[in-house]
Length: 68
Image 1 (cartoon, one colour):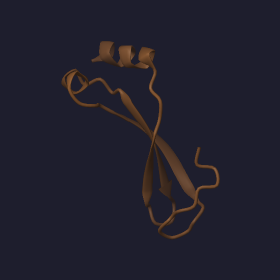
Image 2 (spheres, one colour; image 1 turned 180 degrees about the vertical axis):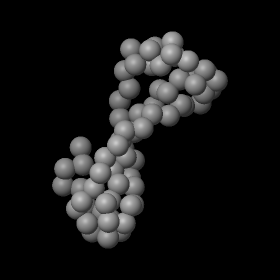
Image 3 (cartoon, helix red, strand yellow; image 1 turned 90 degrees about the horizontal axis):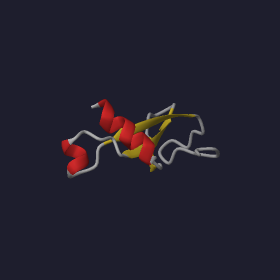
């Protein structure tokens, strides 16, 4: 995903990635269903972070809903 990534602030090519999930709006927010997934790419030198939208699965959304 971030292969070849270069920080736009300090031009470093060293980075870390992480995945986060968040609720949307409406009913997903009401029931705390984490139906949006993003990959965060953070520069190791200056900590500048970019977020890239990912795909969520229907099964993952159902499991998350049942776990609440």
